[in-house]
Length: 242
Image 1 (cartoon, rainbow, N blue to C red):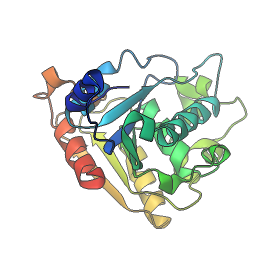
Image 2: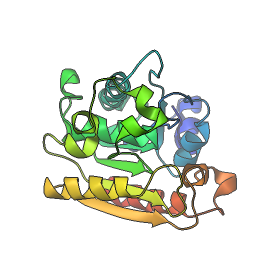
Image 3: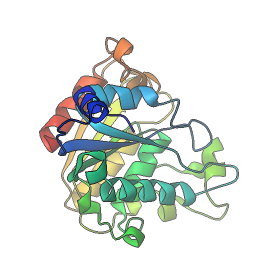
Image 4: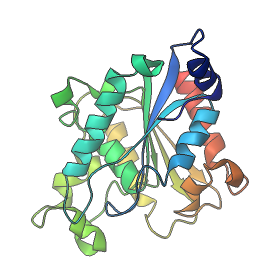
């Protein structure tokens, strides 16, 4: 958990605390096989600086675990964050979910299909908004090395989030990187189309000059000059949650 400085200071001083901070749950990328919450501390720090209590989560990975294990873990973390928001000095009605790359797949998949949150008594609309950054929401994984992250007999129709939208949804923001050589922008285009066909509000944006790595790397305070992803994310969050 990462806390805005005024909140952290109030907690340390045990003084009067504002208990209605908005919260962001962040899901890291890494092709479902690498990365952890510690490596993405910079995202938590960056969003905390912008005034958001931020949860950076872990999830089970390949080769020991395949879909839907990492989606179930993401859903559980989202539900936990909403259920515990008050004790974390946050407003449970102002919780956003955000992910990058494989983490964007997780974040979008966990919310887009209400079945993932249902075991925890949470609905997709209990999430205020979802932000997907360079996520692979619509591709034939069988043609790529990431096939190891899915059951051997699975098909794209069974697992891709653009084909698994179920239940009333919150608004979405889907961002792509202009120079992404890892995840093709058609993923976001197809996800956007599917969401809109389901009556969901979607905003999209392309981060100029960004690669697959720098579209999240530039969230780090020292790298804000690389591209404007942080400004776009924070502006959107401020509009939706504050």
